[in-house]
Length: 180
Image (cartoon, rainbow, N blue to C red; front, side):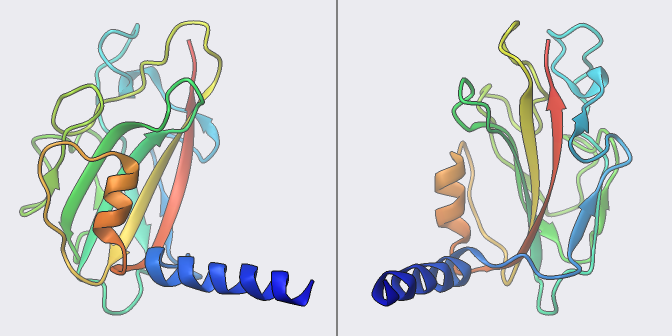
């Protein structure tokens, strides 16, 4: 039993070193929606009634010392979606503490890079779950990185996590829901 517990402890330490730990005080919020509450239709894809495909406002604070850049992901974790990538933005400058609503694609901070989403477009792609598939959870994660990372094209969530492996000082997340 002790050997099993030691193995789990070492696995946890390993994951913390590779992916970073949530640092106490590093938080993200949004004036566009509340955590674990519905995302407004205007943030959804244009194919959804009322959808304008506007990226949400995101604000974060208390990044750890040594943060050189931020990255943001938005992943739909519903089983039907299979980790659908709605947004990955990298190389957001360390002095950036928020993105206004509708920042993607034309109001992103200088130097920030938006990758392709699972829809095939560059930048933010809002919710558009299949009708009748129930409530989908969209996890917006802000990563504080020890150094900028470079990529282009499309990255799955797993490929993104490999890209930032060893560079994540902390991460924080907010969840929005959407259904139709």
